Image (cartoon, rainbow, N blue to C red):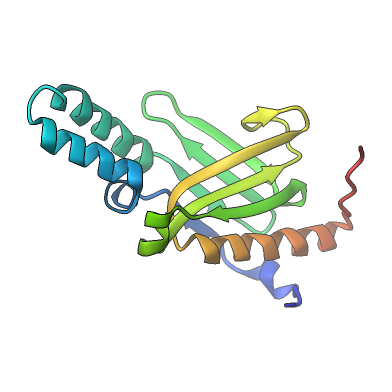
Length: 161
């Protein structure tokens, strides 16, 4: 088991974003979208090409920044949304990998927190970063920063009922 040191808190900010390239070339839905467009030639292209452009724009305009004590999220094409989560409120950081994502080394990062302002219900919210290159490394770094921030603030996690 690795020990969390105070050096983690002193690390520089990490900026990351979901990858449109990983979506199209390294995920099952991306392959399905490309394959359906090629097979159907004309009639499905009226739906699939605008859908592909929208997905690519969404990935390009979504940005995450991990600092010493917060996770910042910025997204939006026409309307911009900015949000942040205090790291001491993070309950769990999970990396999920489909079969195709495992083949190409990218995954989905899911952050669960007690911050009620994010997507979710009740006292727990979820932030999902799809098709993230090197998701394992970012998950581990975020986990270390969460632990260091909790220790620095003297916060302990207690689950009630």
